[in-house]
Amino acid sequence: SVEDASAMLRLDNLFTESFDITDVRQTLKDQHLNRAVGRIAGTRGRTKQHIEQATRTRIVVADHRVHLLGSVDGIRQARNVICDLLMGGPTARP
Image 1 (cartoon, rainbow, N blue to C red):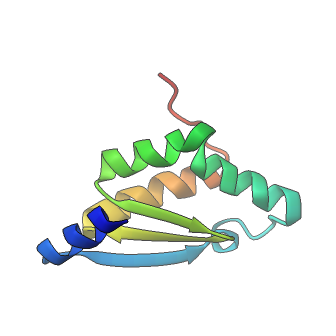
Image 2 (image 1 turned 180 degrees about the vertical axis):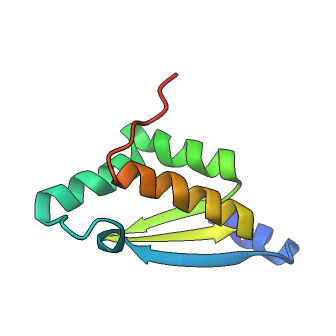
């Protein structure tokens, strides 16, 4: 979005990281892969939004790749949460 682009211009310590969902869980195929993407997004995108807010990152899930944008610590935290979700960990429900 335009807001994200303008924020990137203002920040010095902004990094990106990308990984494939199948790198985290090699056995995922077809429908199970789609379910894993759905776990990251959550209902109406809320899970992804909560992870972004808690870690101060931006997350883009495209096909079976996850792209993270943020600080080194934020990316590390977001990646850990996403990997836990992919491995079957529970989502935090209010």
